[in-house]
Image (cartoon, rainbow, N blue to C red):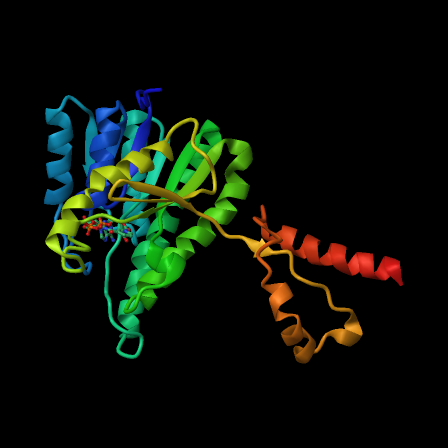
Length: 304
Ligand code: NAD
């Protein structure tokens, strides 16, 4: 089955370099009209230039595609709204949003400056929130939308020196989980990508021969599936170096303690049963956890 985005309009943030550039080129090569957003700053978010986005637009146009460069800083809602207004004026719809823009300000938590924590949260979290907010009503009205968050193994599992980045990246998953529920009846599907690729963001973190395996294009192959009409929703797709996997959150069935047994000692005594992964499930919403516990409590009351 070949994947075609003809007639679709996509916004890719942070598309002047690395993964975003690769996503934008691939979407355009398969027929999408693409807004190439990039602030054009350095890896740590300092500085700005529209050259990076313009260069990607030139590449797309040279290959016969259609694209628009926009230098919005995703942390600035007015600039984001201007980007979406220009997209609507030119193409009249927004089908796909890939929230990809990001920066790094790594330091161990002991040495972390809180301004660096705030900035990383602002770019990744509020950047994704601003862009999603600016297209949400358009997608609801269209009854069509595909949104991709960019999370990271650093958020899902932790990485030394990345408390700010890890917190920001896991926030993408939390943001996605509720958007999935609220977007469902409007045919808006929201997924997250957890990439591993050799870009300027990772160039000093890995040896050269490993970096050769980590082409952004292999991540893009997965990202594009999340942008299709057949896209799943609420998926965390991990991709890198040709590997593709799905990260999922499971909860054990757990135990029930009657009111007179609800002591820390009893919780500790039941530690193995609480952690018993033989009985576990994925919960469709936070309410399902309350339901699970209330069913156990109800059964207890019935049995009395
Ligand atoms: P990159 O530095 O090559 O590209 C990021 C782009 O985002 C840059 O072009 C930058 O100018 C742009 N950007 C930064 N702040 C912006 C802002 N406020 N507004 C608009 N644009 C802004 O990095 P990359 O490796 O391609 O990373 C892309 C995304 O993937 C990021 O969200 C990153 O956290 C995530 N990620 C990357 C890896 C990896 O292995 N490369 C791993 C996990 C997650």
